[in-house]
Image 1 (cartoon, rainbow, N blue to C red):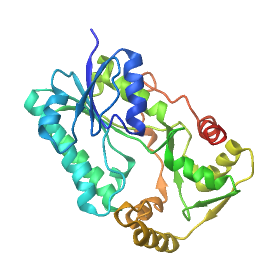
Image 2 (image 1 turned 45 degrees about the vertical axis):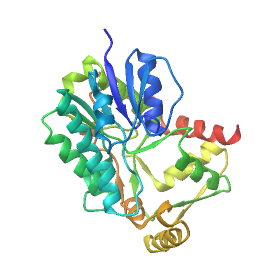
Image 3 (image 1 turned 135 degrees about the vertical axis):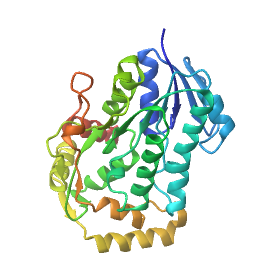
Image 4 (image 1 turned 90 degrees about the horizontal axis):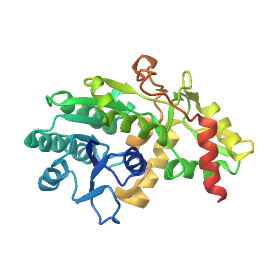
Length: 301
């Protein structure tokens, strides 16, 4: 008998791919959504949000596993991050406790490793703390930069790179993971085989040793675009000025915030190989060249 998985963040970039894979694998799905969604076989949509206790109670009713993907990646201040990544996680946990449901797959972030770096990082660490103190049977997954053909941020960078220039932070290395590979490990954890990894915190990536430097990433973008792309390192002080200008123009809707600049300019966003999942359980299938070529193809379509 297939399991029923309750999913938060199901309409987002990672969530929508994970939803598709859950259905393809034979899971029944209950999914939280703020806005009305088209009917799909195998999905029960629950209207609501992470601050709606009644909606969360309805979401977890009859579920075997909760897959908590929803989170805030951009907010104007610490309170905004706390509401989504701290309080939102606490509300999901409370709903599970009321229902007597134990199994939780929590999607965190690399950012949780550096809580003092930015408000976003602090909020992701706060979410992890709440999960660890919950008494639930949890497994946490910390992805690095997630990309794929529907990722607006990578597409925006690639649009600029088409002109042969790619602005990058001053120094550093980073790991990547394609959204399909991330979804695959999350779906695998929702099955019975995933129950063997209660209490584990995994860092997942595309398998590239020591990630990619910004120069190597620009070269990978160039291969995907079939042209030379020159990396343009920008000092943190200049990026802070851009963030200030973005805030003046777009206010609370600004995409480049000072908090995000501090995150971007951290020199080490490479996963710890010792925290990868066991290879017998999951391994990545999509490297950067293949994945970025797929993103580039969406620009040419």
